[in-house]
Image (cartoon, rainbow, N blue to C red):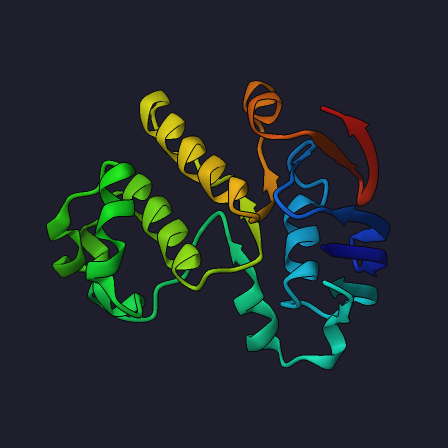
Length: 198
């Protein structure tokens, strides 16, 4: 589905791997190793060299916004461009069943973003990305601020989406989580990437 071939940028050296439909690959490594740089390069948010393609279509043939609708990116610190939470969604009421699965209150859509906790923002950013029905989702520590029960809810929701074909590239500092959610691992060290079994 997603093919990365000799992708490089400042701080990242010649990365090649593929991601199949419905697969989850964990990305691990020490802080500052280049994990977030990798996700940003794939999302076409920073200049990079090399080839990235989705379902046989090269990234350079698409506009950045069109690419990111299909290859969604949820950063560790999501950006918010409007004051009210629901303004970040195409149709917030349609997202309520998923929001409830993640322990979010129905009324949260009417709240100001500034009133949300860090964990609520993480879950809302995930929902915002899922609403656009991506084929691939790039996740940068999406559960870092969540307790064990809520982390389990996020993992279960994403497992359901994987069963429908969503592919995930999931940065996690938690080896136990990587073992639970992924079939393979990419280990990033000093900007270089090697692949390992789960």
